[in-house]
Image (cartoon, rainbow, N blue to C red):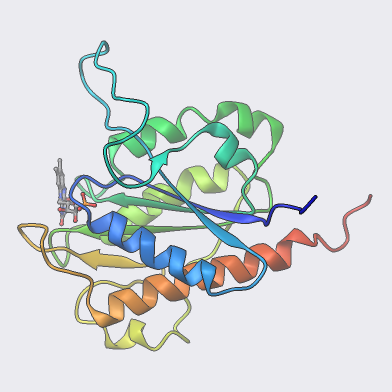
Amino acid sequence: MSVPLPYVLILYYSRHGATRAMAERLAAGVESCRGIEARLRTVPPVSPTCEAVDPEIPAEGAVYASLDDLRHCAALALGSPTRFGNMAAPLKHFVDSTIELWLGGTLVDKPATAFTSTSSLHGGQETTLISMLLPLLHHGMVYAGLPYSEIELMETQAGGTPYGASHVAGKRSDRPLDDQERQLAFAQGKRLARLALALAHRPGERS
Ligand SMILES: Cc1cc2nc3c(=O)[nH]c(=O)nc-3n(C[C@H](O)[C@H](O)[C@H](O)COP(=O)(O)O)c2cc1C
């Protein structure tokens, strides 16, 4: 029987597709490494009407995440569009359902990162990334941003931050990822995969 590969969970919310395009670039970065794979998952929108229920399988894109997707991941990348400088409510709603994993210390010492998309250049990318960092730290995860050895960080005229990959989607959410944004999202996925493989060995741990 073949042993399943470890996976990086790329968990995102995207209303208009920009954050999803980033998630797919991170996944390509993960899949460029041997011995690990990417698992893309999304979350349903939330509604002020409690009775509103979404179909179990979304019409397009990744399927919805379960707690088990999170429980068994080797690493986690969280992605969200900016909502007033913060992560979007549907992603926060899912994060708030992870108390059971927090109680069990399930995610302790696993690497994690975050990525985001905004309409405007100075519309709150860093604060949104930090809003996702906070619950990751509470879970005991090891946060990895983007190092300046990725030269696109210095060259970018749009998205890309040391706190994580980002994208400026424009007023109508129709600006595609540019070359630097694409490269940085790819590099972030690749880095997370390498860290996941390295940390999976857990040197120094008593058996
Ligand atoms: C309620 C709401 C709040 C938003 N707040 C911001 C914001 O603070 N700064 C910004 O630049 N864009 C903001 N936006 C725009 C989205 O973050 C942006 O269009 C993003 O690229 C959408 O990503 P998506 O295509 O993955 O849905 C907001 C959009 C909505 C609906």
